[in-house]
Length: 114
Image 1 (cartoon, one colour):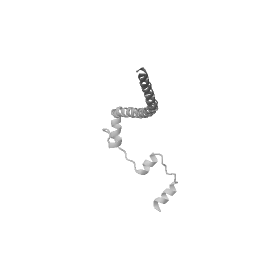
Image 2 (cartoon, helix red, strand yellow):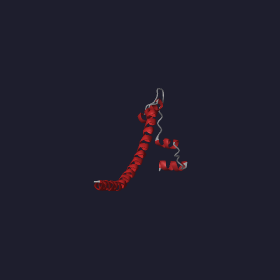
Image 3 (tube, one colour):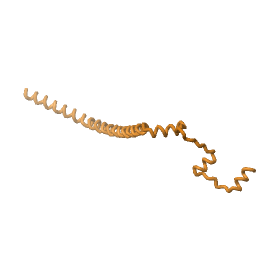
Image 4 (tube, helix red, strand yellow):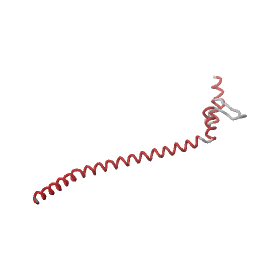
């Protein structure tokens, strides 16, 4: 009986060892693959947090009275009371923006009449 019991214990130890030998590399591979996934997700989380903080900053900026006034002026063309809007012709606007016509006066007159 002791001999049979000894063989059964050896067989169980051998089967258990084979099971561990076969499954250990697979577990290590799965662990490394999951670690790569975790690193990738942490990178995405970092990007999302940066985007979230940028959006929160823009939200607080958009709630200021200066932003609301600037948006009303630029996008809606609104003005304050007692303000005067000055519209420049396209040529004067180009001169005001630094795009100066370098032609001499007599050439301008020539092109105007001929």
